[in-house]
Length: 119
Image (cartoon, rainbow, N blue to C red; front, side, top):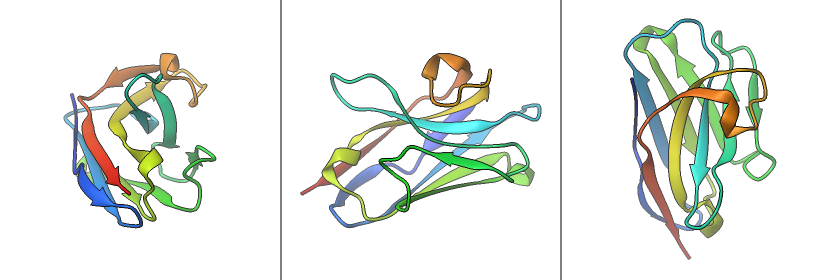
């Protein structure tokens, strides 16, 4: 039900915009997670259904911006000032039980999109 896109290879300091679309959802909070090789899946950002509240991991604050367009059943992650440590597979998720920062609290997951940042 969730489909992420927009990943790719970019040089450090560059930008990428990820998109995630879905078919039908109720009024869920949605989010982004990422997983680097050998590491656990980690929280990146989340946004409430109405878009009035956003939450970010400390590691991406000030560099990433999450938004959504419910009319298009879509959410976005604008990533600027990318660094090699941002390299990971990025996943979109929906319906959290409350603890946005824990992957286990999210019900729906899309297939990921690879982001690679070269130094």
